[in-house]
Length: 429
Image 1 (spheres, rainbow, N blue to C red):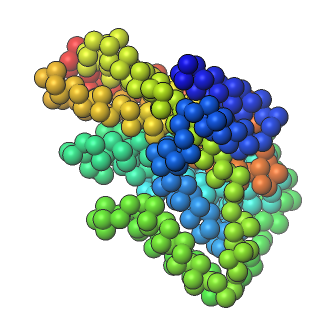
Image 2: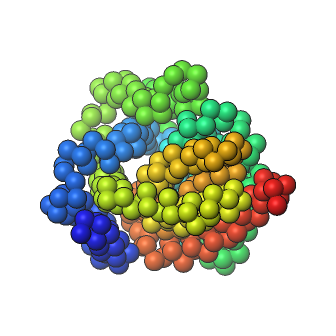
Image 3: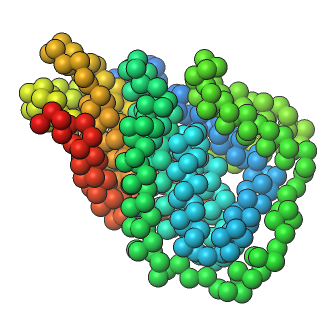
């Protein structure tokens, strides 16, 4: 009975999220509340075990930093400088945004990168009267692909890196970097071909842009320097967090509090908090609780164990199966609990006398990270971009996203399968 209730509530909530007629955060929170009313779990269990407070705290902290930094005009300055560097050419802007987002997502993490870059891109598109949708989609796709390349780029990679002792920061770049570069090139071709005819700009607007001094937008030099300093410290903290023995959330929270302390006299905390995307945060809370219902009744464990049963523990079949199952599931539920369920299952392979498990780990990482591109709620970065965009009047609907995300994920999984087979599994055939 509990399984039927949890799955039914999950499906009904996703139906309304896809429909888009009711606020997504409200739908997700309603679903979570129903799970508690029906005794799938208690409030205490939901808050203690199923809400990923690290993610919520990291998101909130970066939203605070972005809110203060935006006040200084830095994002407009970067936007105008970037647009001038590519001479206002729409296609160059699209490709440039992809490359910058992918690099940022690899060195920081994809959520932080989109929080920093989306306001910049929205400022550019408004300035040149360009449609924001292609650029927002490019940022989402590139952030999820770029984040796949490193240990800190996406939460599943962090979890896998912690579970496997011999995996280092360099291991992820060496093993996942080549397929990430290939996929990034393909997504750029994919997006340019689809949207090129829509990316037309008025030459007069470009002339005005090229004549403008970007420094005009910079305000409050003291707060600007403070914001830049904290942003640099945050990035360094993300890159060297392992050496510092600090987790990413601690780095982000510390940076946000430091910037609040430095700027409190110039920009009140009340004003900062007004700019926080509370709807996005509550949507995440609801999603975590919804997926927690599936975890509580054992649905995720069943999927994980059944996959091993179907492949009979064969390394080749299981690696490919992990890639596709994690890729398909990650389109509809947060990939963190699924990866958490799969880690002990993969470790059990050692009891079968199999010591070389690397293909399984790389298959899980590729599927969990790349699958997030399939739907609007498939990855944290997607939800964050949609939330910021809606606040600026640029709504992205679930079905609108699905038209582009689903084909891209299918292509990504096909190419990743070929990559896994050629690099890791071919010698085992």
